[in-house]
Length: 181
Length: 109
Length: 231
Image (cartoon, rainbow over all chains, first blue to last red; front, side, top):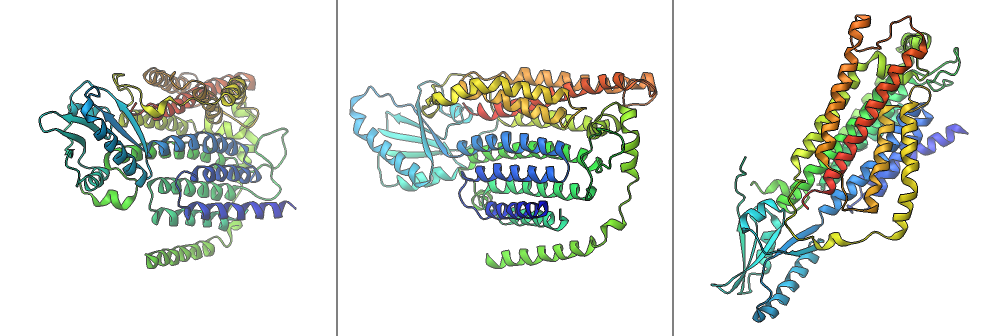
C-alpha cells in the first residue's frame, strides 16, 4: 500500500516539473512553485527526514513565493512623471491626445500605467535618482511636449516609432551619466 | 525510493535551464536542480525498516543522520541565491525595458 | 530551434544511461560504521535526543558558522544593490493607494500571535523533537511578514535590523571559542566531557536561540528591501 502511494507521488512530482518547464505565462508560475515545494516535503517525510521537511515547507512554500510575486509585479509597470503646468488652458486637447498615446502604448506591451505628478527638481538628476521611466514636460519656446527617457531602454525606441508623425511631441533619449561616489 | 527518478528530476531542471526564454523561469530551474539533489542524497542513507533519527529509547535501528544535517544548510543557501537573482532581474528590467534573454543580450550598451 | 532541443535531449539521456550503470550495486559499497557511532555515543557526548541537531551544533559547528556568515553577506549584498532609502520628496504613486480588504486584515490580526508562538516553540525545542534554529527562524519570519497585510506604510528600519544581525554573528563566533578554555578544543561544547547531559543542553538551547533570531531577521530584511525598492 505504501509503495503505491510513493510511486504515485514521485510520478506527480515529475509531471509538475515538466509542466513548469513548458509553461508560458509568468504570473501563474507561482502556484506551481508552491505546490512543487509541498510535494517535495511529503517525499522527504517518507524518506524518514522530518527536519528537512520542516525547512523546505517554511522556506520553499511560504517565503519564496511571496518574493516572486513582488518582483513579478514590479516588472509589469511603467512609471510616468508629469511635470506640465496644468493651469494653462490652451493645452487641454493635447493632454488628452498624449494620454491616449500612452494608454495604447502600455496596452501593446502588457504593462500597467503608473502616473504621478510633481514639479520640483532638475530633469536629469530626477531620472537617475527617482527610478521613473518617463518624464513629460512642456517646452515654452519650441511649443512642444518633451518626453525624456533612458537611451538604453527598448521601450523608448518603440515610443519613438509610435509618435513619429505627431509634430508637437518630441522624444528625447538621455544617456546615463556616471554616478558620483 | 528510487535514485533514478530523482536523477530524472535533476536532468529535467538542466533542460529547462538551457532552453528558457525568460529570466524568471531560469531562476526557478536552479531551484528544481537543488530539490533533485536533496532527494538523491537522502536516498543514499535510507534503508527499509529504519526509523527517524530521534532517540526515544536506545536500541532501535535508525537511519543515517549525517546527510540530513548537510541538506538543511543546502535549502537555506538555495533560497538566498534565488532572492539575489530576483533582485538583479528587477534592476535589469528598469535599465533595459524587457525580461527576455534575447533582447537583453542583443543590445550591447 | 528544434534541432537544438533534440540534441540536448539526446545528450541528457546519455548521461542518464551512465548514471544507471554506475549505481548498479550500491549496497555493497555502503558500510554502517558512521551510523553506529552516532547511535551509540550521540546522546552521552552532546546531551540532545535529536541526532541531527547534535551533528550541526556540536560535531560540525564549523559548517554552521559559515552558513550564518553566508546569510549576513547575502543580506548586505541585496541591500547594496537596491536603492531603498530614497527621500520622500515625490508625490505618492497612483497604484500604491489600493487598500486591502477587511477579510485579510481580520484574519491577519487573529493568526499573527499564534504563528509567532509556534515559531518560538520550534526554536527552543530543537534538541528534543524535529526542529531547530534554521527551521524556527523561517517560521518566525513568516509570522512577522503577515503584518504587511495590515498596514503597508509601516515598514521596519532596515539599517537597525542589519546592526542587530552583525552583533548576533559576533556573539555566535565568540561562544564557539569559549570551549578553548575549558576543554582545549575549539568549536564544541563548553561543558567538559564527563558532565551531566542536563548541563550540556544549556549550550544547545543558547545556540538555537541565537541562530533562530539571526535567520528570522535576515529574511525580514530581504523582504522589506524588496517592498521598498524604488518608492
